[in-house]
Image 1 (cartoon, rainbow, N blue to C red):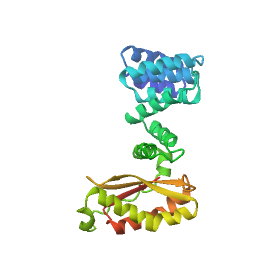
Image 2: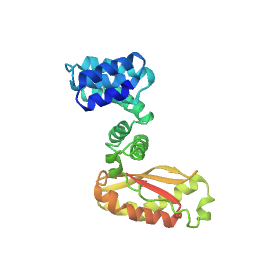
Image 3: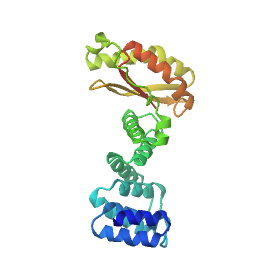
Length: 245
């Protein structure tokens, strides 16, 4: 019950009691308690603010691969909080936390990797991170990713002509549809779109990333999504999921 009591004390702003209880839990190897103590030192709640001690507690939690420990260390290295700025290490720790399912880390990793939207590998990794954050109910990620509300219509007939083709042939058909019907609209406004992933099993997913002037544009994510989905559902069929970022 110490962990529950500690959270109750923390929410009541009884930071001293919370710290004492978390220290008891930390001695038992509770890695989340270690992170919580680190956060007390990071924020100066019930203790003198001490970034060095905060970092030490976060690092202790990594023995058990605590996602919040990785995430908070990443923030420290990214924002030069009590440590020298180390962007490669920050990126490494964001990746670790993302792989462990930390929604905030997934979102920050996505924003980082999608900043320039030029490198194909970075865009794919960033897209995957944003999709992960969205599926973990991260509000900002869900606002940015188009297609989350669109469900595959499993009652509609399959386009067997498309489905029986090889993956490479399917990709070529999708790219041709984008070239014919979608990219000209975007290029006219200084933008573009890239398919960063195509998944055809067990469900068909198409992952698209806006580029240029369309990147981060709310009008692009809302106004153009329906055009993209309608186009691809006609080329393939309605048993598809189309995500656009």
